[in-house]
Image (cartoon, rainbow, N blue to C red):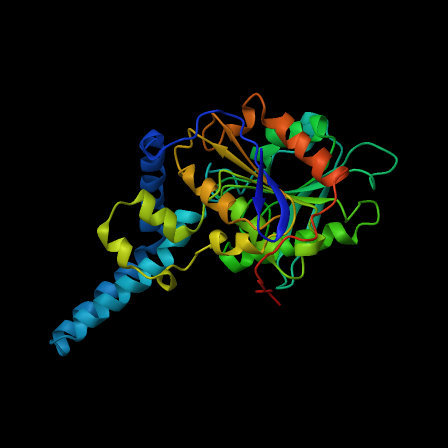
Length: 367
């Protein structure tokens, strides 16, 4: 169906299922979420016990020598500091499973031709990746997908999915391992992941054997926020051929309010969150053809967030496909690969960008 939109020619909507999930149909996160929270809390206790012990000592001496309100002010400051930094432990899970930093599976297991690559970011962090290339004399006519993974594990855990991209979509794939994940250096942060994405794109652009005009950004879950940020930036917006985001979210504060039903979270301003990943604000700056993929049985993120992102996306051509899949297994649904293949063939390989699309200005480049 074609829906007119002010400022652009048309917006095409394609839905893979006839049923649109209502709020009552969304599954409430249960066992998976509880396991993640418990493991994270144990990790926090083991990593922060020195900090907690030091705080107890400071609090004791402040109460002993000064009394009054000073100890309570110290307690509040310490609690706010802990709350600000604790989101790192909930959001970034590079040690899940426990051997994720020790072993990264190779694409050779799936007989895919690849290069083990190291990419240097602007802030001097060396990140690891796999450049999986089609076994052809020339790769310049083949699109290249930059694959941004979720918040846990490493790129080796996504090879089953990438195998489908390689063999059925006939694309090159650059799998990016964020800083602090797998074999990459550094530690993860919001700005750091953005810098990793920019460095990955520049790496593809520097390769003479790859077509830098056919670069597609793919992001799942947390990777969707990373991909949206890159596609929205002034320095990259017109260089991205296509954007595909799967089971992603509108922002971290929105997730916190959705998953943790505490009334106080409604009053917490966004600047109190160390990591925000505000995709809903940035999606209005995306100009390239965009495909949203949503699993209607997502047990972690509300599928309605994909609806919100789709509605606010400013791309001249955009699609929303819904599949009866969960957060991490939507890619095994029957029509998943055919829909992505159709998008790439029509909008990236044969298509041309709608130059009349209106988008918001966005620039937050990392030096």
